Length: 250
Length: 278
Image (tube, rainbow over all chains, first blue to last red; front, side, top):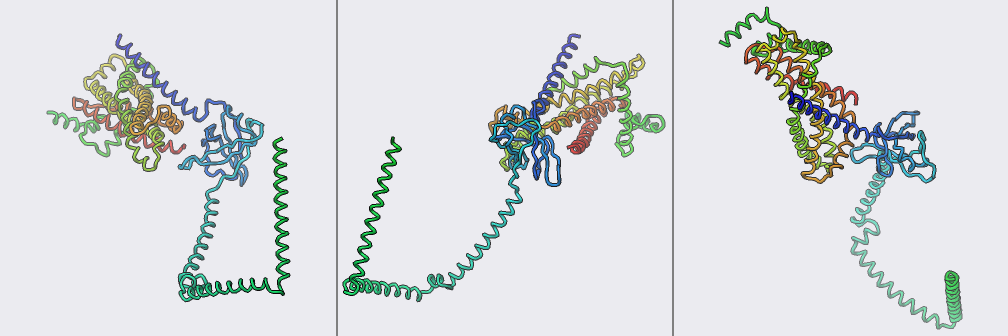
């Protein structure tokens, strides 16, 4: 008989422990879904839910603050998303906060991120907040496609040009591949050097000739005057700067 | 000698004996006998429900059976659950490591244990431990004519023997499943920490973050059905055992086999229903 009561006690402990474990599990799972928190509901209207599902997380500054409560189609181009968020957090979310659909990790689970707002007005239960159109993967791909097209046409042109250069077509091609052209260029440069020296000698001679002496003197005078004016301007600028510094110092 | 007795019973089976006795008297298990077995089991189940709601309620016997089935199986279920959690974690790590997703290990282990491994392993262990013992116990009661004696003395043997055991199984196996889940998750924690370094709180945060009510409740509900199946089949096989010591062994053996098989069949049906709602 004594043994039987002992067994009953053991059974009681067993059942109590099991029930407590179950309740703890239910509490923790429920807490994650904000079943036991006081919550408010805010809504956002999106053009595209992009795979958002009921139960996905709502984040603010990267912290989970709630879940998606409902998704419904309003018109043929708008989707209304109800977000259930913790009441304790609502003081940080302003009426001009914005909601954006983002991805959670690589596995593609969607979430809504709320951006902090600027104005002082705190959001209330049932308020609606503005949304930002998320960077759609398809749009990014379309833009990327255009970029790739342009790049391919550019590289195509480059290929033709380099081919021409290699085959010695065009002036650049000649420069690289035609040895006769190079020799001619070399010779031309030598001739140019001699020509320039002759020219400079001629000019020197011209300065001393009677006919052009007057003209050269006039040119020199004008040059000197220009230099003087430049120096004056520089001095005035320096003075102004000094005065400004003094005023700032005072 | 045994052979001649068997032949004799086989000879008159078609006229005199009931369906289930025919089945239990046969050496082989034919196509016909399979359906006869299913039919007899169904009527046995129906009788269980009829008797269960009808007084007298044998509450003390129910508690005694609950102790034998629940508390006495706790050690076995706990050790199995711990090892399953540990092994599952260690075995899954390389695959997840290929994707660089070792951080998902707690979530994966939690979902596998709570959804599938906890309920099924517990039920199969109990089919082995509890189902066989019920089958053997009832069969030996039947063979030694204790059940008939009860009937004579005015106690409803079905109510006293079958209903209490089946109800105890139905309520204790889900409870054992809860323990198996919890201990399995502890095993998973040990497994995670063999090659990594995760704090207890982070591990359980990740576990509960990955779990949903849709993981917990369907698995608990199906473990009620597992318990029901183990109890009913064990009792059915024992209650309808044929004469002789050989019958006791057969009853225990076929109780385990049929209970294990039906656990997996129930599991398959349950997963279909669950996925229908998800």
